[in-house]
View (spheres, rainbow, N blue to C red):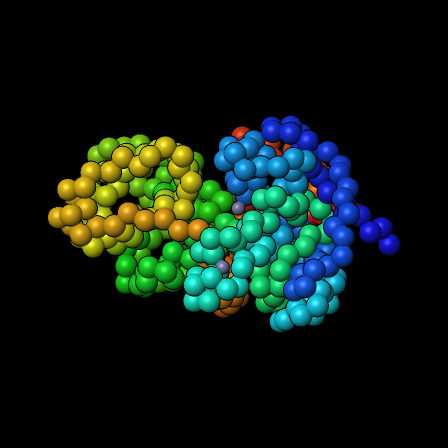
Length: 339
Ligand SMILES: [Zn+2]
Ligand SMILES: [Zn+2]
């Protein structure tokens, strides 16, 4: 057996991926090797590829929405056995001993390690992570579509749990893409009245099919103004600057505008409406391993899966371009054909 891991890596910022091999070395304590079956593509893969966040190391192997099978277990690995079908997302390890880790908020661990930050990701025949962040996939889920749950999915599921969104709530989602389409599916199954903010008529029908009860055109100031005071919770999944004060105005008193989109510019927000309406603006990263399990069970119970398009992994450059050009409906999954 070839001991090298076969991957696709970018040699530098914004460069096309090309074949790259590395030797992962011996398995460390608690580490798990996963034979990659498929890997979703997230906008963060593009941001990291381009070094938008200044933390990319090259050669850079993208991929943090992995589904595959466990092939080897390091010493003291718990919960998993060889042959298990599993998923791996943005995080691949956390310290296990800080207050956040001890409290079950491993996703808030200050030294949590990203699967593609300083290590090689899942555009590969094999990827390695600590068992804590390797989640068993329920058999009811379609493994070929499940990868995007491990980054895009948990990113939008986590705030629903963290901020106690209730089935009686009126909620809205900004941005109907990789994250937003899953938010619509989750919130609909959660029981909420769901509105999708869309910027094009083309996406209106799609948003309704994905689970929205209604849509509002965010480019129409009158529609947005007409929604004043209507929502308990607005989830932003885009990474562009919007007129945040208009969305805050659309919240009910005690409402929350929550962003999981990594908007790089500062959020320009007026304090007065927050004060008089006791409103909140917040953000969150992905969820803890326990919240990932809860999401997977919720998906199995309600028959929820990401809406995906499939490319062979050997055509990852085409797939990245497809995502970059905004054509993905709604998440691209690469099927491993590297070995
Ligand atoms: Zn991601
Ligand atoms: Zn920790």
